[in-house]
Image 1 (cartoon, rainbow, N blue to C red):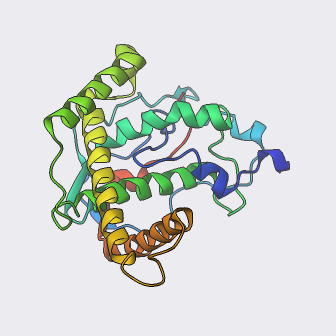
Image 2: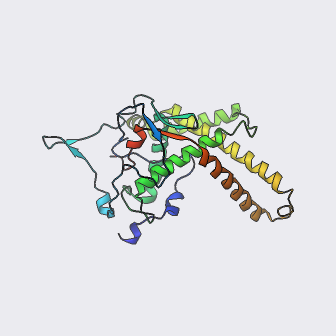
Image 3: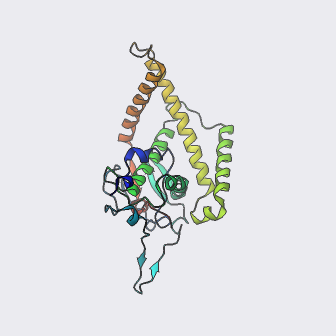
Length: 269
């Protein structure tokens, strides 16, 4: 693999922010509806992917199946997005397919713009393909948003105000207008799901800010931190938060449906 075609986890992480996912291969290539669930594994765990060390030229070839007559079978885009089925359960919070679809498409254009039309099968320095890493990162982002939102009551964070709700609704409406009706239909992007994502992200940010405020008040009372420079103190706050979040995540129960297990991250087309 030419070095210019190898991506590090740090490079990719820069393009993946909270609440953002990646496009699906073959237009949401997921399995049939099922009620069975199993415990999710961490990002590096075994998943249903082909992980050959492909060149960029090879990774840009579209995979397709053939039937007995030799004719190519094309999976209809969005064919499994008709029903809003449960896909993930995170600490008893259900994440539905409509949200997965919306998060996926919201990131696709940015991801392709940063790394090329079809980077999904390209091997990274950590041994994962871009598609594998993208799927794991997408799960991490959803899990983070859910965990923080579920901490709202614990940290006395109120629900979104009317103005905040209106801002989220306006953003969702603008986003749907920007992609157009045809794209929204083709990729099963629903305005209600986009709105739910913006609301979840807004609430999780309020919780995050409240946690940092509480940490700051506590630490500033300690001799080691009361006179610390702001820049250095901000790093301490961030480290303390990540330590706390790591504990929450470690005890977080994540269950996945077969739909999620069979989902393949990749280029749409």
